[in-house]
Image (cartoon, rainbow, N blue to C red):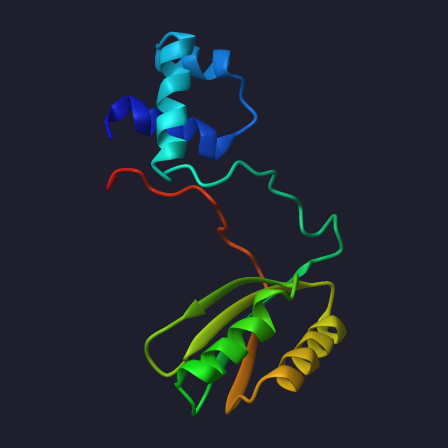
Length: 152
């Protein structure tokens, strides 16, 4: 990956709706050369998706919750049950298996505490957990989908 690829990726991360003409002008490439680079980045899996980022508050999803999950079970059957229990819940927007005291960290977006409690009840009805604790976001200081490209 060279500097031109990085510049293309920076532009697309900031605004994936930019036209091919705008991108090619900004990176000083012909339209075809720019298109070929974007297509190669997609084929190599560097560009996974092009999406619209929605405003959570406008959609009545103003509360972000980080849910720390601990389990006493670490076998494959439990893990499959857990994955199927949480993967398809639309309010859960990210799921991570972590090191340390917490086994899994979930990020959820909901309208309010009552909606979080309903989400919590749905999860614990589907899978056995030894401990669940929630942290409610009071202020979002930084949230971005832009990845640093200096390491690529």
